[in-house]
Length: 265
Image 1 (cartoon, rainbow, N blue to C red):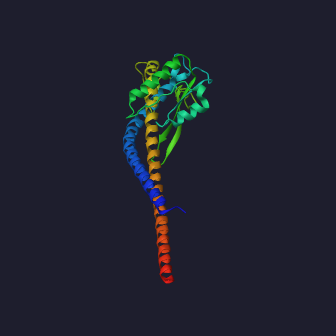
Image 2: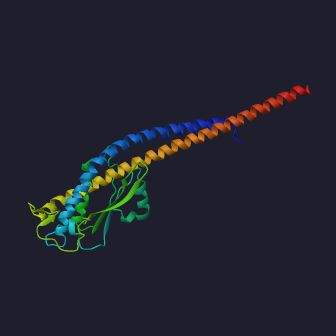
Image 3: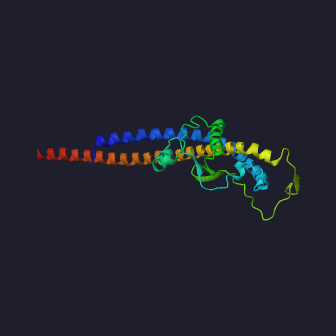
């Protein structure tokens, strides 16, 4: 049975830990609020951009002159996976342990203060250079999509070739696009628009994935610190109860000894 001193030391230690986890919860909540604001601002733009490109891509798929980012290499042999993990680098260390020889590059401290679009654009440029060199056939990004503080969804999103390159239709479309009764003519041509927008879309989708992942990380961290704080409180209650019982038992024992001694005299 632990002594009263041991119990007091343990209670002080757990209280100190509880203060730390409570402070970390507040910090995570503050960062989560900023991250969610970024997600809410970027998500509609990224989704709309893919929708516009999907409309153009559906017309260009399989036609001569289609950009390489749209149609790909025609093979499905070499895959480039962009894995977005937390800044604790747990994911990187795990992948390096199991697939170290297959890792081409690793970027750390991305968005250390606040994620910027320039960082995503730099990553996109690395991917484009590798694609032009014929380094891969398919590029996919894996990240956590933020749904709520309690829920993050592991998401696999194909970037190259463009995921909407294969249209979902049963009959060919006319030469001029028809959408909901409206007829669209493109100036410049669809080829030029796609050649310009597909590289930009790559950076936009990477940026959107990174901020979704950042918000998911802060949400998970906030939840973990909240649970840790609650668990520390429960442990303090149990230790305090045990301390009081042990102290009362010691006092009772001393009283019995005093009374027994007095009676013996």
